[in-house]
Structure formats: structure tokens, C-alpha cells
Image 1 (tube, one colour):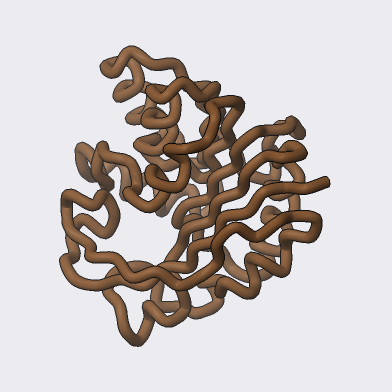
Image 2 (image 1 turned 120 degrees about the horizontal axis):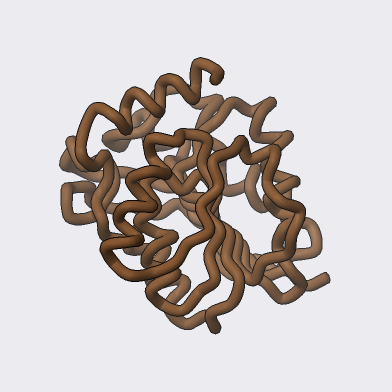
Length: 204
């Protein structure tokens, strides 16, 4: 177990839930009109988005390297009566399968690591499938609350879209959101946050 896994396992083990049980609002609104199929939730954490997808009829695989987080997801899914294929692994070890939806939400790594896992994740999107990325934007360091303070961990809209060759970009912008316990992220901090948001469809 590396230091990042140790850090997140310790954080997830320290409280009942780190995040809300509700899905990310922007993600849910973006997915609402998609036809359910196979979905991959990358760095799923406690699984709130994966469980929501499963409840909406998606066949979901959720991957995270923090086994303490995944254990909470398993418990929540059981209580909700939905099935999710939970995988405790590094994203580099993700099964080379094709998904109708690949979602990456608030997975912040260094640029070198990102250059390794992002192409792998993008290649998991099936033809005509959707890719959704949501994460803290670099501008959040100066103007927003929550999230990492290291700019190397925060890809811009341009960095994400540049990785999407063969995709039609449906939406790509910095979005402003208000954070609180109900919104399900940064639940210890209330204020404005700024996120990178990219939604794209694979054409090839």
C-alpha cells in the first residue's frame, strides 16, 4: 500500500461518511438523459455516484484503491438494494473493457500520474459512449473553497479536452457551485468552488 492509499484509507476510516450519500448534482443532471448501459466510475470513493447510477438502471463498475471507501460503498449499496461491481485496485489496473459511460469525478493526481491513467480511462469509452470529467479547476486555488492547493493536481478544461481525440466535446467549461453538506462535496466547507467540467461523446 503506497502513501496515497494509506492517506485515503485513514481518511475514510476516520468518519462514518466523508461525502454525502447524494450524487454530484452536475453529474446527475448530465447523465439523466442518457440511456442506461455499462458505466465505469473511476476513483469512486464511497460510491455515491455509482450507487445512484445503479439505481437508475446502469450496469456499474466502480473502482478505487481505498478499500475502506469501497467497503462503505458495498454497505450502502446493500442497504439500497442495488448491485455495483466494486473493484479495489489502482486505476492503472482497470479492466480493459468498453463502457457506455466513463465518469471521473474529483480524482486529483500529479500531472505525470494523470498522463498515465487518463488515456487508459478514455480508451475505456465505447464508440458513441460518454465521458464526463468533473474536478476542482486551477482557479479554485485563488477564488474557491475546498480541494487541493497544489496547481499540479488540478487539470484545466484545456488539458482534459486535449486528451479527447476522436470525441465530440458536448460541454467544456469552468462551473461555479456552492458547497455545503447537501451538495455532497467538501462537506466541511461552505462557500463557492470552481470546477473543471467536460462532457464528451466518442465518435470513433
